[in-house]
Image (cartoon, one colour):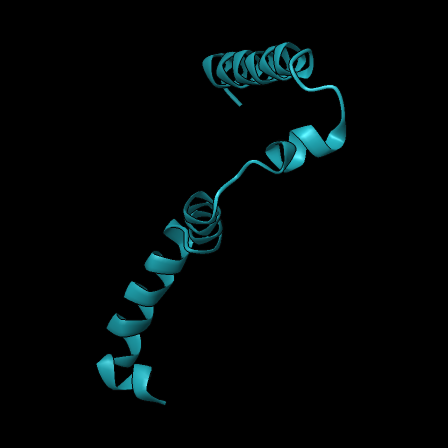
Length: 76
Protein backbone atom coordinates (compact mmCIF):
# COMPACT_ATOMS: atom_id res chain seq x y z
CA UNK A 1 0.00 0.00 0.00
CA UNK A 2 1.37 3.39 -0.97
CA UNK A 3 1.87 6.11 1.61
CA UNK A 4 -0.85 8.44 0.20
CA UNK A 5 -3.38 5.59 0.33
CA UNK A 6 -2.52 4.84 3.95
CA UNK A 7 -2.74 8.53 4.83
CA UNK A 8 -6.18 8.84 3.24
CA UNK A 9 -7.39 5.78 5.13
CA UNK A 10 -6.06 7.06 8.46
CA UNK A 11 -7.56 10.53 7.96
CA UNK A 12 -10.92 9.00 7.04
CA UNK A 13 -10.88 6.72 10.08
CA UNK A 14 -9.89 9.57 12.40
CA UNK A 15 -12.66 11.80 10.98
CA UNK A 16 -15.24 9.05 11.45
CA UNK A 17 -14.22 8.44 15.05
CA UNK A 18 -14.18 12.18 15.77
CA UNK A 19 -17.67 12.64 14.28
CA UNK A 20 -18.96 9.69 16.28
CA UNK A 21 -17.62 11.08 19.53
CA UNK A 22 -19.14 14.49 18.81
CA UNK A 23 -22.56 13.03 18.03
CA UNK A 24 -22.40 10.83 21.11
CA UNK A 25 -22.84 13.92 23.26
CA UNK A 26 -26.16 14.69 21.54
CA UNK A 27 -27.81 11.32 22.19
CA UNK A 28 -28.03 9.99 25.71
CA UNK A 29 -29.17 6.41 25.05
CA UNK A 30 -29.18 3.75 22.35
CA UNK A 31 -32.85 4.23 21.50
CA UNK A 32 -32.24 7.88 20.70
CA UNK A 33 -29.30 6.92 18.51
CA UNK A 34 -30.77 3.99 16.57
CA UNK A 35 -34.38 5.06 16.09
CA UNK A 36 -34.03 8.85 16.46
CA UNK A 37 -36.23 8.91 19.55
CA UNK A 38 -39.07 7.24 17.59
CA UNK A 39 -39.60 10.46 15.63
CA UNK A 40 -38.97 9.06 12.14
CA UNK A 41 -42.05 9.34 9.97
CA UNK A 42 -43.33 6.78 7.48
CA UNK A 43 -41.93 8.48 4.38
CA UNK A 44 -38.43 8.86 5.83
CA UNK A 45 -38.54 5.27 7.08
CA UNK A 46 -39.47 3.95 3.64
CA UNK A 47 -36.75 6.01 1.95
CA UNK A 48 -34.14 4.80 4.46
CA UNK A 49 -35.19 1.18 3.96
CA UNK A 50 -35.09 1.51 0.18
CA UNK A 51 -31.69 3.18 0.28
CA UNK A 52 -30.22 0.46 2.45
CA UNK A 53 -31.73 -2.43 0.49
CA UNK A 54 -31.27 -1.15 -3.06
CA UNK A 55 -27.70 -0.09 -3.55
CA UNK A 56 -25.19 0.27 -6.34
CA UNK A 57 -24.29 -3.41 -6.13
CA UNK A 58 -27.87 -4.39 -6.95
CA UNK A 59 -27.92 -2.28 -10.09
CA UNK A 60 -24.44 -3.42 -11.14
CA UNK A 61 -25.43 -7.06 -10.71
CA UNK A 62 -28.66 -6.66 -12.68
CA UNK A 63 -26.79 -4.95 -15.52
CA UNK A 64 -24.21 -7.73 -15.62
CA UNK A 65 -26.96 -10.36 -15.47
CA UNK A 66 -28.78 -8.76 -18.38
CA UNK A 67 -25.63 -8.62 -20.48
CA UNK A 68 -24.55 -12.21 -19.83
CA UNK A 69 -27.96 -13.94 -19.83
CA UNK A 70 -29.89 -11.60 -22.10
CA UNK A 71 -33.11 -9.98 -21.05
CA UNK A 72 -34.85 -13.35 -21.27
CA UNK A 73 -32.84 -14.34 -18.20
CA UNK A 74 -35.00 -12.01 -16.10
CA UNK A 75 -38.10 -14.02 -16.98
CA UNK A 76 -36.78 -17.31 -15.56
